[in-house]
Image (cartoon, rainbow over all chains, first blue to last red; front, side):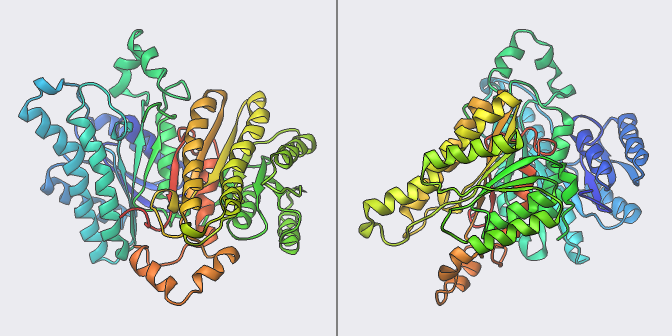
Length: 251
Length: 261
């Protein structure tokens, strides 16, 4: 097992890619804290799956751009599961709005969740880890859109490219403390968030034609890539952004 | 560092490693064997034969099979013959790791045509034709994984390595292009790109006065020198369809942060 007895906190883990990461982490021997924002029942289901693999699990509600809630979340997980070895900043939102129509509020909320929150959760985590002399790993969830233009994403794409820079800069500052920082860029993954693409007979073939593998990815495939990056096998890999998107053409 | 080799699920896979007798190639070959693979060892017929014999014995002690195919990778004919031999003996090829290379070093102003051709042929031309030969086996069998060893110098330019940097940049980009052509047929090509690694072939460079201190303090935020073993996890990950299914045409830097800043 790749993550035996590690303690992992995964934000936005009740659904989609976060859920896939939680499942694979549990199978690889990790205890998992499942953060969620609104989907309490779905989070409980993920926690139940983790326990079914013989690992400890907890659910923890928090709005990740909110510092007080994040501090409470990190504190609770640390207390209940022990020192956190792995932080996965997975929570994110995606909306599609043409550049000329985008409002201040739409920009601010999306950038808050997708870019400021990973920075914030990481800072709260690193301060605690460093204070307790505990080494760890952080993984940010980016997107193929860090390297690929899709319409109506003038707010979304900069947050994902921004995570690459955050990853690089954090990795250098945190290296003396033994904390690695990497980023995983998924492409089209079959989840609730992308079901509108998969269900649309006009758009689906257009999108799939851009993917070298010719198919969407699934959440488990994100879980395995994340598990490798967070394992000891990757101990010399830091500051990197790994594309796991089936080979998008033109990126 | 603890690696659970069996978790990569490479049991009874057939893997070719070029230049497997020392340094990175040796560590990768042994790592693949620990993960369960049988090894085709493609080493230059006139180089490192004692070391090759040691690697072969160590792999066989793990209960894996080996096939030694003497191969001068500057010859496309020999590369093709090596791949044919692997297919003939094992019936399939699941993994190809293009590791072997040679480079000239020195000021670009003094480089000869032989320096250029020798570097380009072993670093880039050999990789393309080995990929092509392997893909001709992998596509009909339903897929395979190719991992090419790149370099930090392909991303971050460096004095006295103009030709090598160009050759390794070619490896990075041809790997991405090949992925686009073959991914649908199940052949996935990726790159693991190290920085200068503590190996016998790099020893003379590392031992230059002041060099190691300069690099570890100025270039490597990790503050320590790359070891061949540091690359093994990344190669096994990319060699394993179970673990890196969606990773296609990616250049994974394993360089202690050299190219971050």
